[in-house]
Image 1 (cartoon, rainbow, N blue to C red):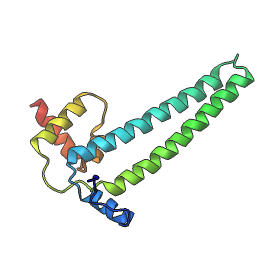
Image 2 (cartoon, rainbow, N blue to C red):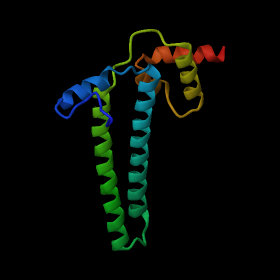
Image 3 (cartoon, rainbow, N blue to C red):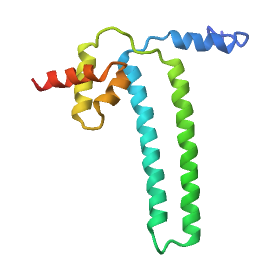
Length: 144
């Protein structure tokens, strides 16, 4: 007997999306996803700026090299636009962080991420769906 899915070809795609939205996501899952998308956006921005800066500041930059650099920068701009679109799509699927208290695991994650120096309190607050003062309290309690 062939394998049968619960979803038949006759069911609308809307039902598939609704089923996916019903999956349970932890606040950590949501924060990790937001962090990954933001990291990708930051990296493409750095690359784009570096390409432009190299092409613009090099006095010996031949026209062909400058045009190639400019084309690479335009491609990165397209990647950034795609990331912005992806970020919007992801936010439509992920639930907003709950108003429940942060778990001990989430507090430890926040402390570790803040200590890494890679994220500000504001960024962590956005990722975890809490306020910056909440993140401040968590990071201060780790120092005590």
